[in-house]
Length: 144
Image 1 (cartoon, rainbow, N blue to C red):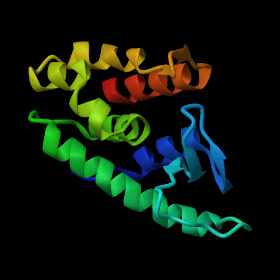
Image 2 (cartoon, rainbow, N blue to C red):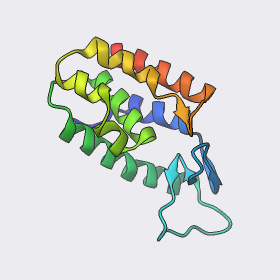
Image 3 (spheres, helix red, strand yellow):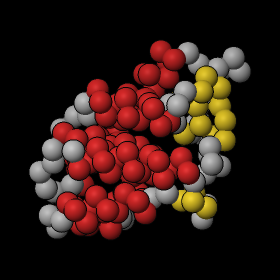
Image 4 (spheres, helix red, strand yellow):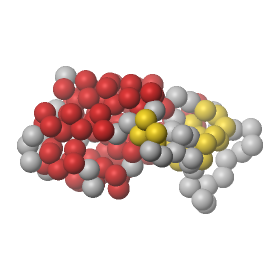
């Protein structure tokens, strides 16, 4: 499956755009639409354009959707897939692969999987209001 434009919009909405690098709540250097800057990456001091950020977003989303396609063993609706790609984009592949959410999903328990979105609202042990809002939106999208 591939993420829909609605799914991309969901990610953009919650990540927001930053032309210059900043530290996200998890303490990671981030730029564009939530792209975590890798040690070998360098960006101009003047920052990047929204067009450049869009290219990076699509590359990152491609990786996230490939991981959802690889890890999820059950059939998904488009909304479920989009919500999962948004989640993976934000929490990372390792966290998703080891999650109870994925376990429930692969057991065919989509309701329990949907309920698990609400557990992913912490950064460095602190509940973040932005993550609470994002997970509620992703869960709602998943159930649509």
